[in-house]
Image (cartoon, rainbow, N blue to C red; front, side, top):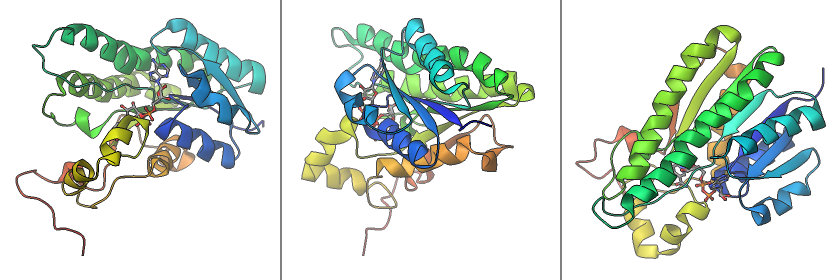
Amino acid sequence: MTDPVALVTGAGSGIGEATVRLFAERGHRVVAVDVDEQGLAALAELDGVVTVVGDVAREETNAEAVQRAIAEFGRLDTAVLNAGIGGAGPLEAAGSIERLDRLYAVNVRGTALGIRAAVPALRAAGGGAIVATSSVSGLRGDPGTWGYNATKAAVINLVRAAAIDYAAQNIRVNAIAPGGTVTGMTAGQVADPAFSRFITSRIPAQRWADPREQAEVVWFLASPAASYVTGVTVPVDGGLSANGGILLPPPAN
Ligand code: NAD
């Protein structure tokens, strides 16, 4: 049996980068995919990691990532479909529907293309796991973030439907729903002390997540420990989605 092999999209920063590092540390060979070549540079130095530069909204990128896994490492066991973009702004603003189209292209089409590309290779390996990245913003609405909310909710139901279609082929499909996590996507919010405090006051754990805390749940969902788990989205949010939102959780001591 060769080493297990994972593919991770959105690998150049944040949650994806932490996932590549965790899987590599734990003995996986990894294909790291990102549209940002610079973000991948440090990962390309790691043992057992190869990189693919491309846009997940393009079929060719997903096909190339799976081909690299087979060509370099002989198999694919896990596909972590994590690449995503944010975007907020009034629905009535100029350009808002073009932004929605791009959010769908990356967050939904990119995930669907990733599943489609990975499934034949996972099947050939006798089964495997797909873990997508949704968001707490897929569980609820946020002010001014309708496009992101819509696409991240779509990921949750895409995962359910794909899980049903592939369960009998021993391919599990799950997602994480991160809450506020310190990454490139949230760097501006984290760097603004007043806004950062405002956000953490709403999180029962009273802090942002480290990307590695997301990667650990991806690891669990991909692992044999989760062999009977499929079609679910696990909030990894310090209790954020557990709170009804009317009252603030207790502050830190
Ligand atoms: P990040 O911006 O640090 O990392 C995202 C990576 O995805 C970047 O390297 C970027 O270049 C890459 N990417 C973007 N579009 C791409 C495309 N079309 N093709 C290939 N790569 C692309 O952000 P992050 O927070 O690590 O985001 C990872 C995932 O987590 C996203 O799906 C995001 O929506 C989700 N998420 C993040 C948070 C958070 O608080 N950070 C919360 C909920 C969900």
